[in-house]
Amino acid sequence: MKTRLTALIVSLGLGIAFSAQAKLPPAPPLDEKGKAAAEEKKKKDAETAEKAKAAMGAAQEKAVKSFQANMKKAGKPVPKPTPVVQAAPAKPAPAKPAEKAPAKKS
Image (tube, rainbow, N blue to C red):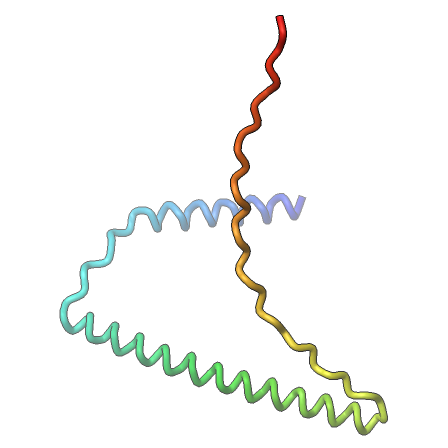
């Protein structure tokens, strides 16, 4: 009973949210200041993404070095990394000509 009530409340909430969203007017077009601000935000977001990518790479390298050091301390063999080869793009299969049905003798 409790799960049905929860499901009913959630579905009603979603219905209200979607109906309210449909009534909102579209955003006005950007003026020159808005376009400049959007371009600056785009550049800033790209820089932030690049920094995050570099930080992720550094963290991954640190984790690998730590893992390998712990394996050596434990006296276990350190597994060698498996080289990853990028798959070649799939070629589309050639179209087969339609086969003719054998002629029936009457």
